[in-house]
Length: 326
Image 1: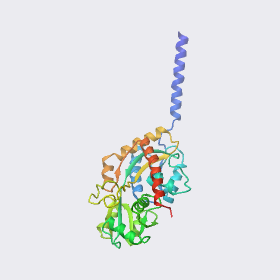
Image 2: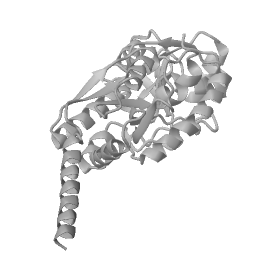
Image 3: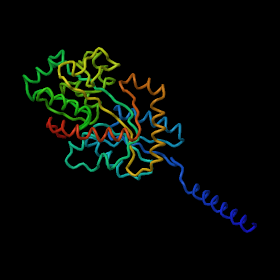
């Protein structure tokens, strides 16, 4: 009996010590600053959302979240950087409909795979766009704008924040569905594109309501419609593009957080839990409602399914529109 008891004690002691050793070898996450790559210039909706989420994560976890703006090539440069990062949860990416649904069809030599190279964490927001036109365009409605474009094919320019991004594809979708010939002029960021529109360098642009509406109130721009399938709560007086004359039009850009592929499942779940809690907090909801953003969360699996569904949808739209990166 004594020998048996001694053996049991030895086994328990070994198991306990092994558990302690294993626990000691399991790193705490996060154990260093987190880099959150934003693949576009500072100042746009993606950047603003990312910084707000980063501030909350920093406060909750005691590790600084550093927003790293890496713009260029429709977001492809920053996305590729994130795809090649170590899959340890310390590099994250804010992606959107352009980087993960449109770019695979728009760029012939994309250096990342939007599905295979990433572990989706959660959707964070959707953002309807307003269709803004310069005062020099004699259009009081979307039907007027379409008529003007058809009477002067190739003479109306549309500004965008980048090739392949939401502001570009919203216009390409309108171009395809209405049969108009308008010319793409890409800029480096939403602010630069909107400034060009205000200056009259371009005649029209899809942009977020937050940055565009002040120019409407000052009389420098007009807004004709919103891109989403439903009217925006921030501007319920504006018709949707579908209501204004292009039946079936519905373009609602989405944004989400992703980690590199092979990031451990437990880290993805922890990130999802933390970010979902941040986005669903009342102060975040009220803060971004006023900016036209509808904060929306998902499970990692739901976000993954969204991306897989959107890619073939946009393959057809890009092909039908004849869109190019210019």
